Image 1: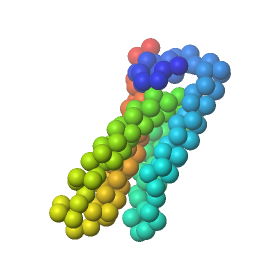
Image 2: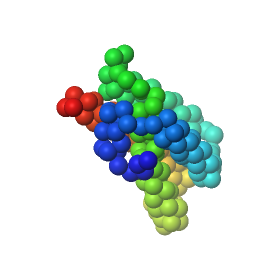
Image 3: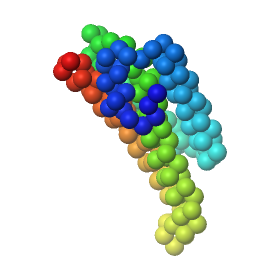
Length: 161
């Protein structure tokens, strides 16, 4: 299993060298990453106001577009093993996004007392929410961008071998 190297994983997927057991392990790892991400988000807390629902809408649109672009990058209807490849690629991509998210969250946590004050923002809580919103949207875009990149790497490898 590859926890970071998207290119090597993409080549193995392109060559069809991922075994059933390894594909199950990738599925398990991606499921655990989703579970961790969900609880990590809950740990930060949710304020259910218009921004939360707007963020959900924006993230849904990004996910729909990202999934369609990933499918197209895999070759569309002529592509091979879309789900297997998406699940496997989601592990190193998910690890990268999770690490970036944790660093962003820690930065927000340790800087919030000094950054989000009435001196710097008229409404510090709203400013914190908006910056968090931008962060989560950015992480989602980064995830789908890396997934499309992984699929393109697989296709390029398949076409050169």
